[in-house]
Image 1 (cartoon, rainbow, N blue to C red):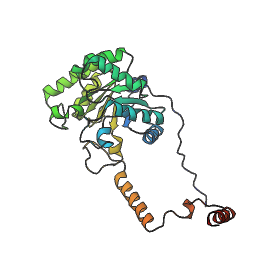
Image 2: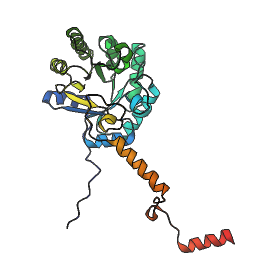
Image 3: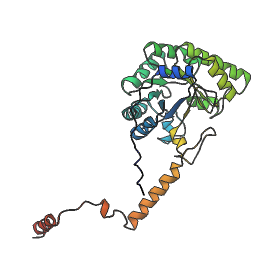
Image 4: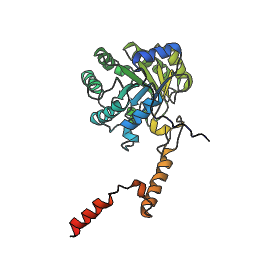
Length: 294
C-alpha cells in the first residue's frame, strides 16, 4: 500500500496584486476576493490561499479586542496590526481601514493619517467610510498618491447615527442617494468601493454604473467582488453571526475542544509524554548528581 504524499503548506509566489489588477479584473468580469486579517499567521495563510486583497479592518475592535462596535480602536492600534499583516502577506493588495475620527476632523489630518498607513503600516491603500461628505478628503488623499477604497451603505462607524447595524438603501430616495454617492466617490478618485448591507439589486445597479470595482458584503452576487470578516468565516465566535456570513469552519468549538483536551492531558499527566521531553546522557546525569549531592 503506497504512502500518501505529504500536503504542501507552501504556495508558489504570486505576482503582487495592485489597484490596477482590481480594474483589470472588473474589465474581464473576474470576481475579486477580499478577506480580513489582523495578525501575521492569519495574513500568511490568507495570502497563500490566493486571495486578491487583505483588509486590516477596524472590525478588529470587535473580533480581536472585544469591543461592542468599531469606534474605540485607535490609529496606533490599527498601525500595530497593519505591520503584522504586512510581514505575513507578500502578494495580496493590503488595505488599511482608517479608524473613527482619523479622517473626519480635517482633510489635512485625513491625508496625514492615510499616509501613515503606507509609511508606517506597510499598507498599499486605505479604506474610509462615507459618501459625498468625504469627497474633499478623498480628493486630497488620492492627490498625495495614496489609493483610497470607499465604503457605502451600512457604515459601522456611524452606527449610532444609523440607529444600529441596519441595512441601508431600502427606499427609493435612500437608494438614489447611494447611487449618487458612489458616482461621486468614483469621480474624486476611489479605486474601489465597498457596498455593505444594501439590497442586491441596488448593489448590482451601482456596480454596472461604475467603471471601478465594487466589493460586496451583504450586498448580493451582483458586485464585482466579495469580502468577509475572516473571524466570521472561520466560526471563531458563537455570540453573533451576521445574516450575510457563510461559515466555512467552526473554529470556536474546535478550539474549545483542543483546550479542554490539553487541560485533561495535563491534569491526568498524559502530557508531556516522553516524545515531548528533553533528555540528558546518563553519564552527564551521573556527573551532575555527584557534583550537587557530593
